[in-house]
Each structure stands twice: as structure tokens, then as C-alpha cells.
Image (cartoon, each protein chain N blue to C red):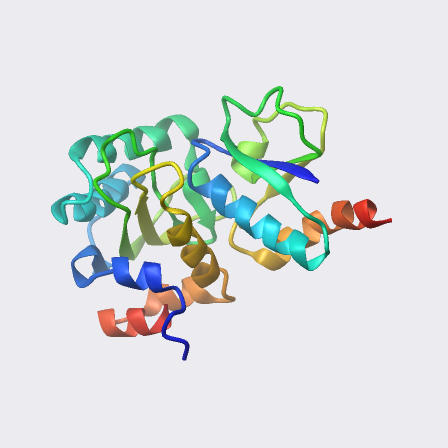
Amino acid sequence: MRILTVCGMGFGTSLMLLMTMKEIGKRYGVAIEGEAVDLGSYKGKPCDLIAASGEIAKQIQTEVPVLAIKNLLNKADIEEQLKPYLEKRDG
Amino acid sequence: MNITRNSTLRKLLTREVVRLGVEGLRTPQEVIAYGGGLLKEAGKVNEQYIDDMISAYETLGPYIVMAPGLAMPHARPGGNVMENAVSFLQLKTPVEFQHSSNDPVKVVITLAGSSDNGHIELLQDLSSFLGEEGIIEQLSLVTSYEELIKMI
């Protein structure tokens, strides 16, 4: 599955979020590919899902589901939000 | 304890880039300038990098407040970062960053990556260290450099 993580610069926050999501995907047996990008460049990039901090997510306009993460360091919380998509993938 | 755990972070967090119980900072801009100032004094970044972090906060908003109580200011390298670096501030008086759920900020970890992917190990360490339950609260109460390093 392909995930775009978005932050203001595509350099810090979004990279950390992408690493966490890959880690979670691995535990569910789902290979997550993805890219960390900035707010100016997420548009037009194909993906199944976009994830960003709540503050950034508000500004994202897209057709795919957007996960708004309040606490970017809370892995349990991120897993909770990502889980439905990983499981859907499975079945 | 596994001594190789979070070794990149441990190596970068030298005494000169750590300040505990910092007083007198009132605005996010002052906080970012202080955290970035430690990196500049250590020869890791130039003045432009500090300005870039402040303008990133002003234009992109407070999303650098990644978790309750924790801000991680950073900017793109832009040729202003000599080497990967990180500084640590514990604020005596918490500062409001105007974040919708994670204010006020008590702990500030200022980041600088020298290239687009060269700081991945550092981010991995930070993510593993800061992902531990209750860690921000503990960091906001730590009283010595030694105690901080032991926690990493």
C-alpha cells in the first residue's frame, strides 16, 4: 500500500510519521511504500492514503482518505487509525 | 541496558546543546531562536537556519508541536547546516505555540539535518525515544544532564 505523509517541509515530521507507519505495516504483514512530502507537492501523487498532523491535515484536499494524527509520537494512536486500512488490505 | 540504543541521538546530545530550566522565553520565536542559537554556537548551523525555522513556524503553523508539551523546530537544510545536530531545552515556564491540542510547550528539541536523507538515523532514534509512554513529562522534570542522558 502506498502512503503519502505530509508536513510543512517534507523533511522532519512527515519522515518520522512515515517510518512509524512502515514499522506498523510490517507488524501487520503489509508492505508500506511511501513518500514524505511537503504541502506544496502532495497533489497529483498517486497513493492509497495520506497521513499528516492534525494541523496540516486540515489543509489537504484530496480524494483519498486522510488520517489526521494529533500526537505524532504516539505509536498506539497511529496504529489505531491505520489499522482499518491495513486489515481491509488483508481481506 | 543496551548501550547501542539510540546511539546517534546520544552522541549528538552533548552538554553544550542541552539547557535545563530555561527561563525568560515568552514566544515561540524566542524559543526557536534559543534552541537554534545553541546549534549555531556549537558550529552546526548558521544564522540563516535559525531565521528559516522561525519563518517556517510563522508560515506553516504550529504543527512542529508534535506531541503534548513537545516542540521540534526544524527547517530544510538549504546549505545552512554543517552537520546533523540536535539541541534540547527544558522550559521552566511553558510557552504557548497556538497549537490546537498539544500546547503548552515544555520541552523543545531543535533539529538540523545536513542533507535530505542524512538525518534518518537521528529521526529514528528520536521517534523511538520520544515514543515511550510518559517520556515528555519525565523530560520536563529532569534535573541534570546526566539524568537526561541516562534516559535516552
